[in-house]
Each structure stands twice: as structure tokens, then as C-alpha cells.
Length: 190
Image 1 (cartoon, one colour):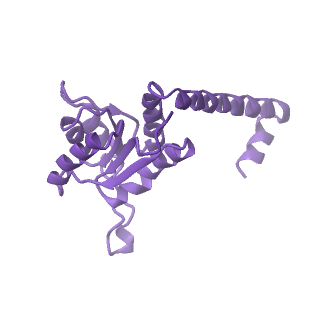
Image 2: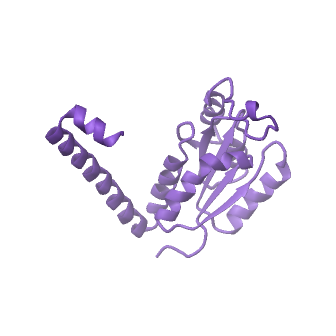
Image 3: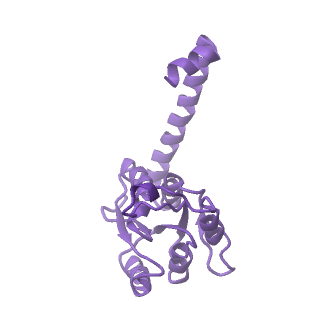
């Protein structure tokens, strides 16, 4: 039976990362899995990062999802401090805190590749599973797969989820075949 306590930690380097990371929380919520969400900056709160690793182990978290942009040290640093599996989410950095409206929502020069490479290229000894840029929902699903190895109920829900995905594609394909591509697109993407 799945315990009624947080099994997944979701951490991010800053509040602006929550725009991406909420997708992981939504997936976990959809599956009824409790999660512990915090802002932990590898650069601005390094002592909190170490404390969080101890907290996660002490409180029985099974997976940590860590999102970070730019140099993206958070996933690797948390992995260095714990034996709990870490799933890294590279985040495309954008500036939404500027006082000037014209400077808001400017993306980083590297389009998230800096974050992706920082997370995926961890040295031997501190592995971090890594999803695509801004793919926090996939991190949530991956965390569920990890939990599914311990909790059969989660595995059953994941199989049903995959079946619903399969049926949705089949239904859309049948609709496209019936109406034709042009009408299908006009109806679907008006």
C-alpha cells in the first residue's frame, strides 16, 4: 500500500522555475502521490541544499526531482549529497523578474542547452537521470516508474495511463482517416 506521506521531493533553484516544475507536481497529483516542494538554490543556499538531502533521507523520500536553469548545479549537487535517485529537469532560463516590461521573458543565449549539458554530463559516481528541457511532466512520470517498482498499485495506474494514451492516438487516427487530414486539422486546431 502506498503510504500517505510525501514520497517525492520536488526542488528548484528559484521561484521562476515553478512555471516549469509544476508539471511534475500535476502528474504526481493525478496519480495521488504526495510530494514535498521546496526552493533550494545550489548557489544561494548551499547549506540548505545539504540540509535538504538529510531531510529527504530522514523523511523517507524515494525520489527527488530537481529542476534548474543556467549552469544547473542543483540536480548534481543534491545527487552528491544523497543516495536517493535524482531526476534532473533542465530549465530554459528566462528573465521574469525585471522591472522593465521590455526585458521580461527573454530566453537564455543557449536555449536551455547549458542546463541540459550541465545535468546530463555528471561525473562518474554522482549520476542524475535527466529528462528533456522543460520536461518536468516526464520527470514526474519517471518518478512514478521508480515508485512503481516498490508499489504495485502505482504500476497498475501507470499501465492504465499508457493504455489511455494508446487509445487516444487510435481514436485520433480513426478520426483523421474518416474526415481527411485537411478537415481534421481545421477542426482540431481552430
